[in-house]
Image (cartoon, rainbow, N blue to C red; front, side):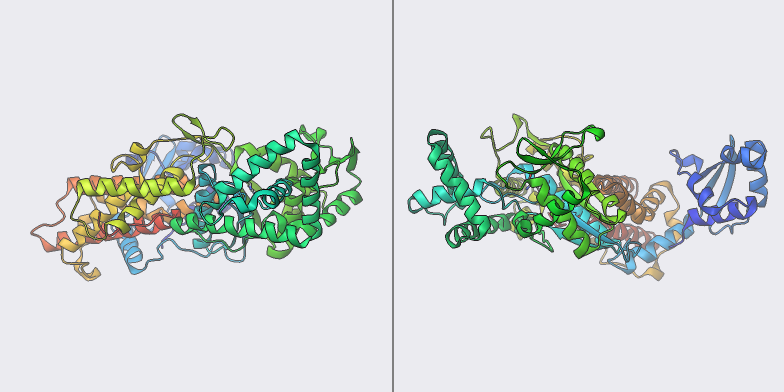
Length: 568
Ligand code: ARG
């Protein structure tokens, strides 16, 4: 597609003899459309060129030589040069691109770059709860978007399958396993066993000792312990899979924490070698006071490893296995300190700087019920599977009310319900806490998933009403020059740029907002213009724009992890 900004930058660079990248950095997109599509602030060059901004502007305007079918007008306003893209060229460009392919905006700018994304990562034998929703959904969206831009992406589910709690669980199961039927609701049953054995441990030191022994045995590969642990893990993964199936999410690697059992000694050796590993009350730590942080615990006083050590081993492994350019960790902001510590300590492992520079914690705020925080501790947990199923149920109720004769209601209710939850999660800046409100997220109005789906379905039904998509030759771009159509075209033009911005900030909400803007611009166009009309040239042209809009809504939604229904 024509890169208007580049053409402008090139021309100014030629005239001023200033590097194109330098010029490009200064070019802005004006907030008000009467100030053009791009603006160049001439005062930025006043010092270098030793001329007043107004003089520079006049001079540039006189000498800039860009064909009118690219830039149709240049205006000088208050030291700025304002550029107006040729509307007809824009229309031709967009419509021929958007309609040609389902891969609109796809690119290869990421070619040759490796991205590792660590996301979802629930803990086995524990409820996969709504707290894990955001990491799952944000991680998956980033995964899709990086991939679409040509990066080589590896999605890792760093399952929490390690830790002393498994020693307890094994002990509990050995004692009372036969009392529980793990075929139904295995995670709830395991939680019950866990609570029961924990209580017993509080009463009886000997039991606690047994639990510790079990964990040690598990680490040493004891047959019975490993078998039980494997059973808990398999049961849990089967439960988690139900959620991934509903969301349509896949991972490239399921290497969880236990995978690093035999890879932690190397970390300890390397840290030892760095001379920074110190003894503290029987434990081994890395002091991080000079960075204003609490020390990073590497080995507990009883010799067992820590969450941080496993993450360090994972960094070594990922650097070697995936040769990553960026390694992203999507977790809530509660783990900010953990990752700061781990990333700091990782610098002592002797890795190439590329790898330590590439580490990035993608943190996000909490999902809160209107009644307060949802955590496993206060008993107020909402199972993710239940939440998604409830969303689907509620969507079905709404459909039954609004469109009772709709075919394939179940399938559509699934797309709408799940889409509503996913979009809601991605629609705000990720650092913000999110208050979960059913009515708001399922509303067909406002900035919601169902609103996007509704707009998409509208585009589909209008095209159908018009008898399908006309051929490109039967449209006339002059009907796309008015404001409401031009606005849509400009948004469509920015699709790829938007995806790139998502990866620069690792912030999927940039795409969510973009899609809302597009849907709103289309609704506006739809309200202002009759699409099905007497004049077939006009109709064809408007149908074409409608198609282009629907296509990008669908591609964008898919990248976020949402499916579009064909009707609703
Ligand atoms: N299992 C952890 C939790 O549920 C998240 C793991 C995140 N990834 C990592 N490499 N530490 O909080």
